[in-house]
Image (cartoon, rainbow, N blue to C red; front, side):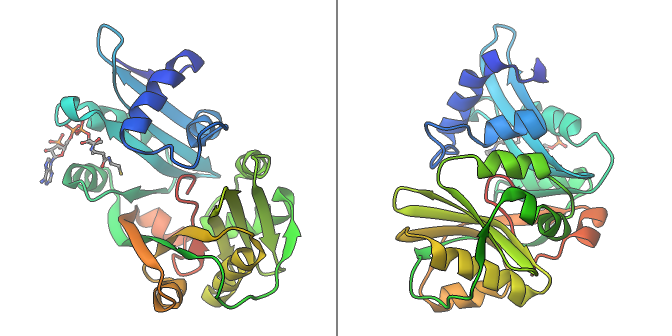
Length: 266
Ligand SMILES: CC(C)(COP(=O)(O)OP(=O)(O)OC[C@H]1O[C@@H](n2cnc3c(N)ncnc32)[C@H](O)[C@@H]1OP(=O)(O)O)[C@@H](O)C(=O)NCCC(=O)NCCS
């Protein structure tokens, strides 16, 4: 049985998410699964007795569908649950993008749904200090909405307002670029961020990093982005790696050298 997740399903969805280590950094607050329920689609898969098999989720940005999650418990994998959820999640019109794990089943399923591997997405981590400090001004979600729509390929004003209201979230911008930051403890996650040019985007992210009090930072950076040599050159580490995938329409809209997505929100 696969259905839109209800409020009552959320504990079971979160239990699956925790088994895959997806909720680190989100505990105790509203999280990206709530965002998928509110601003996209969150599907819950269960067996006849109601026990969880897995879940999948999308977020919408204008016409763009960002596939954020597709997870099936190990003991139920390779029996068609993932494919059934994916077919439903990607049934709408409009451009589609995702960050695919290295699981060959994920990449194969996404290719069969019209997406293509595009560029690596590097999850980079390193010290927040010691990098160039371009100026950015603190701002609000409304102020960055238009810049974000251009960089990410679609408008998501409500999602940005929801994110901005979470504890520790700050928004930064210039007239040409923007970046969101979320500090939890000594750690900061930067994204989404974007700009009119690759350098503008890099400047916004570096400006947001310079503004944080956090010690360590995490970012999801497309392989073609100028921040990759900057950060790896400064000694940052690749903590993990996905593959940015999109269909033809998605690749028309988004420039991966001008966009630093949020790791969980796209
Ligand atoms: C990826 C995942 C969601 C897929 O769900 P699933 O229920 O196991 O997958 P399904 O049984 O529905 O489909 C698997 C598909 O992979 C194909 N496949 C399996 N191994 C493959 C390989 N080495 N190369 C190509 N295709 C392969 C199968 O043929 C099947 O495709 P088909 O249904 O079109 O024949 C699930 O395996 C999972 O949770 N993996 C771990 C978490 C993860 O990495 N999730 C992806 C996040 S982006």
